[in-house]
Image (cartoon, rainbow, N blue to C red; front, side, top):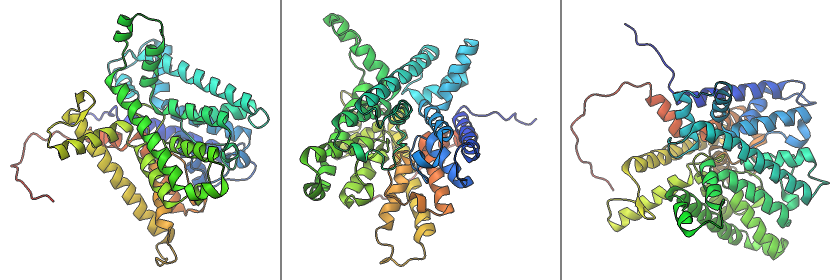
Length: 452
């Protein structure tokens, strides 16, 4: 008797994200989205970048696409930011007042660090909170500069910032606002809010909801270990990136930018490297030191269950704890007052390894397709630009040194695939593949191997 084939719950996000991207591609390729025709690969690239909240573009969003095309992109960003499984499960919940176990597992995997939550109530809070934060952000942007941030433009940029998409209707992204503290602070607040995860936002709200509560109640409402790890790691990465980028660009800043603007620009670029994709500096003219630290920040990304990509701050913190434990000769990697369990450590190591392997493979392919016939003296600097572009796609960041529009058909296809994998995460694809494999009911004899 043949075994009945069933889709794994891990396959659902892949299928639904693919369907959304396909729908977006068809809409962007239609004659209603732009005055000039767009190729299928460019439409697919743009739809993938929007749905995967990346921000890499091959055509200028503000001038190439008309109002309908921009609305399509905005819709793809919102769907991608919330997560297609979140929206699907919310619709099912509101329609039938019931959510299947498969949806519960899938949303639990994508939104929270555990699955012990009331799905219906949580999804309502996610959508309400998202809309509220985005509306507040849009209102603040409109107040800051009503002439440039029209109501639609303010909403577009607020959603793009909170969803960590990086799409902008301005050709120079946010370089015009480099010295504007008000606009920069609004964008940074939206980026960080969208990058720390919905579970952390909800817990912070519960924690700060009653500032005048008794000491006993405040003790009960202390932040969880997970939330503290996310917040402290995020803060350290932002500060370290801020310092390195400032000194990496110090010579250029000293010649061209006032001190206050230099500090603000460095801070903004450190924040936006957390998979947001906006820029107030010309990325193509930054030093190698700055580009390298930005590559590291982009690869790490934001927090699990957020709009951000990358291997996530918790993975990075676990790897650091593991390295420290090895140096100190300890058996358990410690993060704060707890030790990380073996299962979490294995997932962190596998995710990091697969991320590095995917990036290395994509960089190799792009070096072949974009400059494989050039001798090294003529292609000098191209490898760093390609590495930056690949990590930006994998981390769903959207920052670019400027080579994206010039990529070949093969190059655009590779970047498109990296955005898709980076948004859903290599672990999800690995879990989907493993879910269809037969369980191995035997073990082979083990043997030690010389290492190092």
